[in-house]
Amino acid sequence: MDRKTLCFTFFSLLALSACTVEKAIDGESRWFYRAMSSQSYRIPVAGNDTLGLLHTGQGKDTLVFIHGFGPYPRVQWQPMVWGFGDQKSMYIVDLLAFGESSSDDSLITIEQQSEAIWQALDSLGVHRYGLIAHSYGGMVAAYLAGKHPEEIENLVLIDPLNRYYALETLDSLERALGRPIEEVLLPKDVEGFDLMQQISIKDPLYVPEFVKQRAVDNIYTENASQREGLLRAIERDANELKTEMNGYSGPTLLIWGESDAIFPVKNGRELLQDYPNARLEIIRKSGHSPHMERPFEVLDVLREFYLSAQSGK
Image (cartoon, rainbow, N blue to C red; front, top):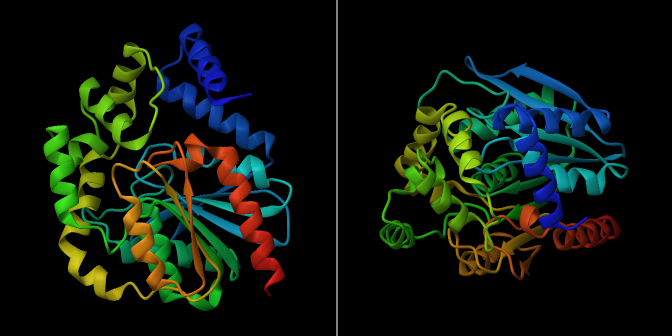
């Protein structure tokens, strides 16, 4: 079933149901992970933080998925989880301020996110794993790999926030959009939703207006002020992050959407110098989220990478 058919089916079911958008998406996610035979956890970590994560899949090798800035982190990874369900043991993380995770802090740092994941996995006895992460989560994963390289078997970063990203690029993007990036990543109206799709996906799908409005009303308002705080924390810590990102010497794969409007492909080429055992794969006809836009191509790339990493042990 192709991407457009899946989208049409989802919205048809949504239109026929009496559920809100939020309930429909949550129900689909629960159904998917029940079918995958999964278990959810909410684990207390440092301070008053609680990290939510879900375990599914079978296999001796473990993957940990870390999502980007969008809502419903467990939905974002469904194509990858489906692709590896009978080969890998997988943990899907909800970053602090997303999903089942929570924090009392208004400015949650990259270091805080990284340590929360490390502590939660440690409490579950998970000490060797691969990381696969997207966008904002990519910088969290890069920080985690740099701080705890002895636990990381391999690293996959998909269009990650990175230390080579120039604020001038963000400024020009905001001028082109006519809005601050916070109002695009956390849309408060239908126009903001359209702009969010425009910069996140190369070929945005048709979404009915009523679905957009309900998404804005019911999904993007959740923890909005705290998520804005995540962006302020990155801006505040930008210079420190540039000097503290230690890189990682193990097998590394950088995956980049050819038409990423947020983090340009040149960042991927620059990032290679931080990872001596890395290669860059550019996914054609894709924007900022190739694992959702071109899941089958990304799955093929990942399978080849894991086979290569395994043979190199």
